[in-house]
Length: 346
Image 1 (cartoon, rainbow, N blue to C red):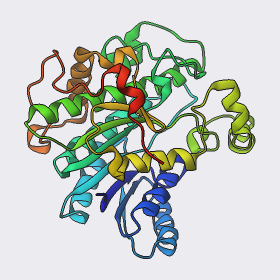
Image 2 (tube, one colour):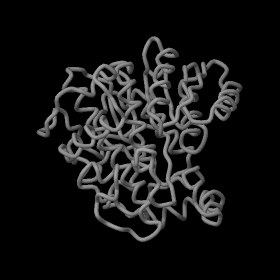
Image 3 (cartoon, rainbow, N blue to C red):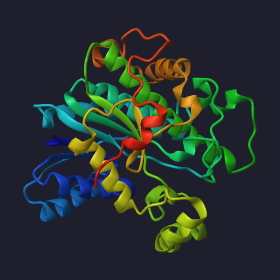
Image 4 (cartoon, rainbow, N blue to C red):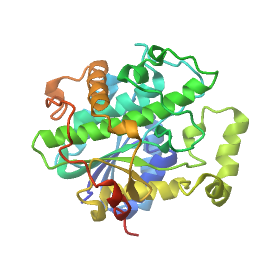
């Protein structure tokens, strides 16, 4: 398991830690590094290659805010993985501090980057993932209003609220809307993972398996790169050194990027999670995601809107167009009382 791996956002933060962890676990893997900065990808490939000389490292340039770039990247990935993909790890993510940022088409920029880009890439490549393979969407505990994360909770009753926040009819205080867009995009990651898993099942396939992952709070990552200088310095240099204190104040789901990267790599390649699909994993345990994330109608509605906004057509995606109507799950994953038993072994 885990010989050909695709990772988005590998040049910093969680993605970088995951790249290193994947190669620790599978030193002879073909690791396809997909990111926006071609020069940074090349530097990373050289560093990883020196540490793991048995690995085959492939760089693929992709802009997750551009559908043409994503389609070109999917073609490049297929060319580099003629025998199929064992794990597609969708790790890239951005958080902005400026309200109201949109694409040229008027779509919320955080939604476009964190959800739409990965929605399209996952659909274009899902048919190339082996039946025993895994597709991992990186979400966040911020998607769940029941978790006290310091980030405004999503206010998403319809899919258009995520893509076009103004349709919600609510005006947040300055600075709040941008952070709410982040938590909303992370809810979309969970909704998308569940819907993709269901469509794979309805196509009569046993896999690939699809999971959503919460890495926890990770001080020191690049997520704060758009913050003001003082907050950026606090995030980058102070908080990483007091993680035990943060856990006392905020709960156990605070980790270094190295720990979260290893947890994500486990989900990608560890035989201990064989068969896990359609579940949300926090750290090493499968847990319940937010109540709204299980809304089948919202899952299907988001899927349809995302296909429209990305121009996804049936010929491009094996699983995208299976007729799906809200209803009882085909496979709902573990029952709530069993979640505590679904844990990765050290």
